Amino acid sequence: MKTLKKFMSEFKEFALRGNVMDLAIGVIIGAAFQSIINSLVNDVLSPLIGLVAQTDLSYLVLNINDVDVKYGSFLTAVINFIIMVFVIFLLVKGMNALSSLGRRKEEEKPVPTTKKCPFCLSEIDIQATRCPHCTSELTEAEISKPDAPELTDEVL
Image 1 (spheres, rainbow, N blue to C red):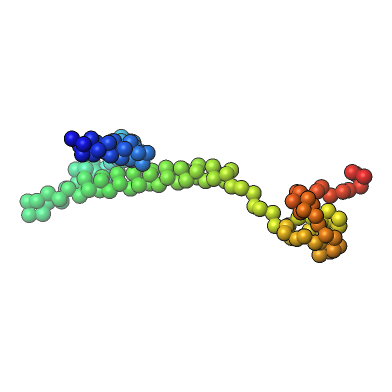
Image 2 (image 1 turned 135 degrees about the horizontal axis):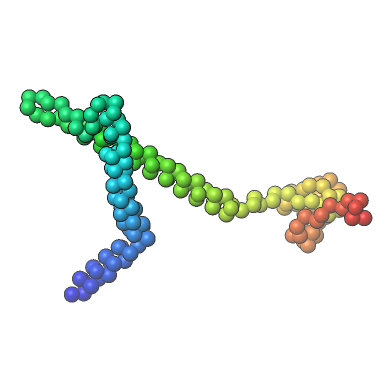
């Protein structure tokens, strides 16, 4: 009895995982979407193609030694497949574009590699303890503080 309880508990954990639920929802939506594509091909595109062939595409049959080869039905299935793949491609492409928009916002600013010397305002390496231009020794407070705004005539 314990093993059955443990088995049911593991099964419940597996079945309620996010990936399994997403897959189940995808299969259900895909089945519904397939019926829409089948209707589009059978009720709209096949009659239009049939205008050119002067017959309904699904009724095209090749008779070889009293055996019917229904190539019209096969062509209909191929058209269904191509439309389905194309629409899924567009959906995936759209979803990738949406997710990349979200990632761009999350990207962090690059870590600065330089800073300004507080004495001569020259650009120096972020880890420098002495300015190579004016040879001023930078104190710990000056090393850790962010870039000071440049002094201009307007500020003075």
